[in-house]
Amino acid sequence: MIKRTDGLKSSNAMVVDHNFHRKYIHNDVFFKSLHSGIFLDKFRQETGLKIKPSYCLLSSYEKDLGICPPHRDRPQCYITLNLCLNQAKVWPLFVAKNSFPSHRSVATLHKHELEEKVEILLNPGDGVAYSGIDYLHWREKISNDNFCDMLHLHFVPEDFQGDLD
Image (cartoon, rainbow, N blue to C red; front, side):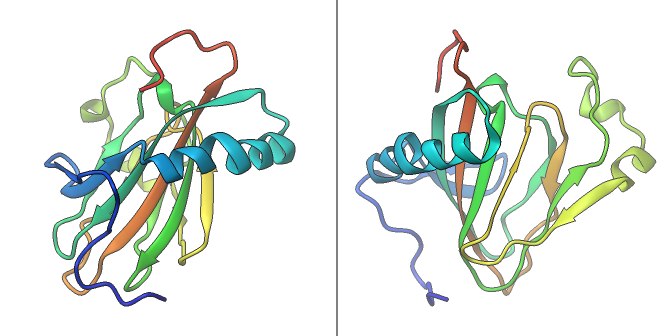
């Protein structure tokens, strides 16, 4: 594991996202080329899905700040591949076991509905794919002695007609 003390480095400027308490880089040239090349080819080969890349996000969740409240993703995230790049210790991702109608607000869910979840533990180099538009997903607040750098690769069906960003 890489010992990180000063955050991610990139040719693009990092943006602060106050909703998720993270810093991120949107569509970094290097990661975008991997996204539309080797990751797309391998993902299509492994799943048989007819997809195309939409956008990618390199995220840095800082100690005692990062949080990812329960949410569904927007249409550009039909399939999400999350790759853990670096962290001090495992920071669980939770995905609801059941999908909920997209018109149903997260605020209307009962606590027991969020208790039926799958806990996903990723180490650096691990990844997980899921449908972010169909399944609620979240992370609890990151601990004070932790950080997590993630690469989020988002895909849409080949016939998707909307904006890819």
